[in-house]
Length: 324
Length: 254
Image (cartoon, each protein chain N blue to C red):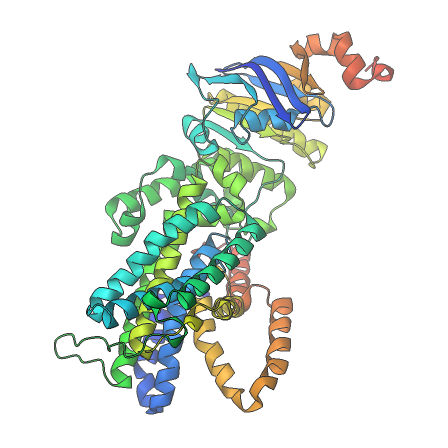
């Protein structure tokens, strides 16, 4: 089972489910909900790299997503760029901005880093809201063009956009698994376990933390850019810290520091929210206790706890197992 | 091998280490003892560059290392263990050790994204180093056990293995036998002798006097941040300053 969860077969099955999903629903609304979930899953994977794997909780993550979204919005609407060109730049802008913010904020440790980034995220929100000549202020940017067709593939219909976001998610998962399973991922994990020990093992803390931060916000930026092309309208609210908290919940529910956990969390939670829609604002009365119970009884999330249980069983049987 | 000259570290008005000069001698077991708060751990932190000294110099193998960062010092061949080792409890012991050799590898992000042959080769080397280090400390039988499930003594050995995986020339051990029973302490002492036999110099802080007196080739005694004595265990045992300041006059017969 454990082997199954981590095997290519399991990921293949997940991909097949994603490909088959439109046939199972045939409903444009469901496709839109799922596509949005895919976009936020990409951003959550990024947040998980810096938080789950490197141990630094970045609360400005939604701010970076907004930077990516506005990069696409501004370049396409005001400067006539193509969506694809702007999308590439949305990642690049975040990587560059992430370097500056990273070398300042990552000097702080633990809660201080989180509080600092909370402020950074709010400043990003304010800049977007107040800098009207650049960002159109509270009005937001309307009429963002849909992604231009690639050959015969046009991205106008919800179905085409669904497959586009799915393709990006698959790519994001593939790259992330490569990173976290490599020596580089082990370096990040060593920093999470204890920066003093990591440093004593010859790991350059600052360089590696900044790299993890940049990769993380690159995911946020690309997810934001994709979001702009998908929703075609963006406002300053994209930068709101509540989006970061949503992503944190996705990670906690699924399991911090795993690839599958945050992914499943990001895909499942929107559906749970949708299904509790009839309760309106009272749905948090249901939501809150579920979260509290989860954190108490499954502190490593659903996937995290399952993997820990499997690892322990394998260890008892003396079997080697791969770290996920 | 390691030459320390008038090393001082002040925290505010307090001198945690005050004008200490000494040498860590190659191929020997160098012990640092002293009452609680004597500045032993600060002394280690200065050597390992976790703290920058207020004044004084540290020379390692003829090179001034006073102003380097901890990771640079580690790359030059100074490894250390801590009083408590922060491992990833949900991963196996072997998995925890693989990163130990990371400092001798070069693969970066680009290699990771391409899955280059350099990366694959280096990952193989790191895994091999981890296995070697685990064999060396006598824990190959628990390679696949979870790090969170091993005993205190095994955890101490894992810490040794992690330091060994960095290919060090000098190992700084901070209370290697802390919280471990007498038989296990004997085993750890044997392991420390084995490390030295393999050409790695050892410097250690320890409170267990019996162990130190039998293990150390050379002892440095610190009290209130200052060096009060230095010499062989025999000399230290007889030194009236040490007996007075460290053990207390009532222990003079020990």
